[in-house]
View (tube, helix red, strand yellow):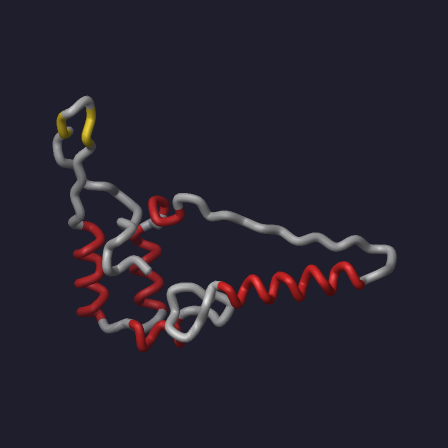
Length: 116
């Protein structure tokens, strides 16, 4: 999948893609702030930072599937990927013991090879 990432992921997404660095966004932000400070006129300027906390926990599986289909990923790879995502099971350690095993209905496990 790595060779496809530069084609599938928009150029503004700088992390998790070979040859791109998240620090590139810091440089761009510094340039934007510098330009904003230099602007004069009637209208104010604003920047907005959004933190997608717990994004991995909230990803809908159908979104993953639809994205792979839209990217024209081979069906066999889509099925393998979806199998890895949807067959995960979990247990919670609670008061020194483990709960019964259960399956989540959405999300990607961080640290999973399918996660960036």
